[in-house]
Amino acid sequence: MWDTKIFTQIALLSLFVFISFYDVKGDGCFCSPNQTITPANWSITFGPPTTTGSFGGANCAANCSTIIDMSKDVDADNEYGMKINLVQCSGIGGSNILTIFEGKNVYIIFGACPSGIFKFIISYPHIYTFSWNLATPVVMTFVGEQMALPRSTTTSPPQSTLPYSGPFPYNPAISRLDFTIGLDTNAANQQYFNQCRDVINKIVSYFTYSPDFVRLSFMTFDPYAASGTGKFSLWSQNSKTLPAELNNLPFFPGNNSRYAEVLETYFFDKLEAFPLRNNTERIFIILTGTDAILSNDNAKLKNDINKYDIKFIFVNMNTNVSTNNSANFPFPNLKKITGTGSNKAHWFDYQQNENNAENILANLYFNGNNLCNRLNGNPHSLIPNAIPIYYSIPQDSTKLYCNYMENVQTYVNTDPKYTISVSIIKYNLSNKNDVLIITADGTEISRLTNSGANENYCLKSSNVTITLKTKSGLVFTGYQSHVAAVSDNDCFDTTLKYSL
Image 1: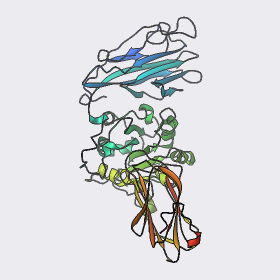
Image 2: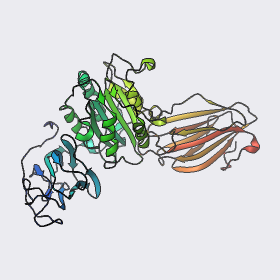
Image 3: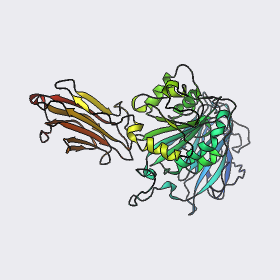
Image 4: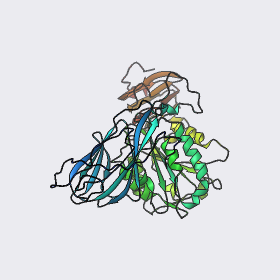
């Protein structure tokens, strides 16, 4: 149910319409008419082609389209959107396909009927085309409920000239992130629901939701894999819609939920139609107090986590157990839901009377070293004429580094007769935003940004540091380096000016 305190105008009115659009299958089969959404038409009900062109007529097969025009900005006080509910579906599949376009881009493809009621959002200022390609008649009933959202700062971040004075080292309102939140809704988790809702609402309140900043998805897990993101389109949530959804969640009988089926069906399989943004950090936070039901073979799940470069964070809501107990880990199946390297999953234990939302963000999201599993380690001791020490951020050099990193790697020369040879094999950073800094005995030697390769330095120093500093914004593939202690004659400095 939509919260009337959040949305200033929501009403329902059945609108049955008639128009002849076009018919390429035969005479007498027409699509529903085009609609321009304004404050005057609060609701629409439409479906596939019928013999009359109006909803409720006899279904028939045609290749035609219905356009829902959300581009009209007719109210200075509000921005209009519409919540679409697919409440009835049969016959879709095989040669019967419905494709929904947002402008020229594919928004949703229905190649099969979803389970249960399928919900998604269409919003100002876009034009949506429901394109039917049917060989046989189908049944699909769409009901649209208009939302009038007050114009607010949720679509525009604070002015960058204003100092940030919040609880984090950086301002989350200017973050760029593809963000998914999951909630386990089996009956055993119902006891944690109020705490979960508080954490989720607080976390989502910090970000700005727009195509240039944060995109938000929400999905649920249950013992039957019955809900999942199938009820909520990917990237359709924000700090107003998600709290409203949380007020109407069902809980399902059982003590353990199915995760692999839900993640594959309702998340990874949908990324083709709802793609992740390029050069954008991806985080998936799941809140639960119980373990998962998993099949024995989770190789595909791990491969997909690595393929799509997703950082999973599990929040343990059960204060009676701790994920710090590695010898008797309380969630052995959920622990298998992880990638490798920089995509290895993280765990956070909920604590009573603590600022859990802020602690999750501070310890993980705003700590890129931790999130990317690239911590500042002990200094590397260079053994003369040994194999060069290789290092990269991220660990898989084809993936993306994290925002908010300050990763320092120190290399110590154990024999002053030798020279430290530093080779930056390649680097790919956000231009002028993220930097790679090389220092020798505390003196900055080089500062690199943007992209390049084969930057070589011969440094007659006792120690050298390579520091990667990243801020918010676009993320790239980071850097790779070789560092070694070599004789002077074996060190070749391509820059010349940095032979010290």
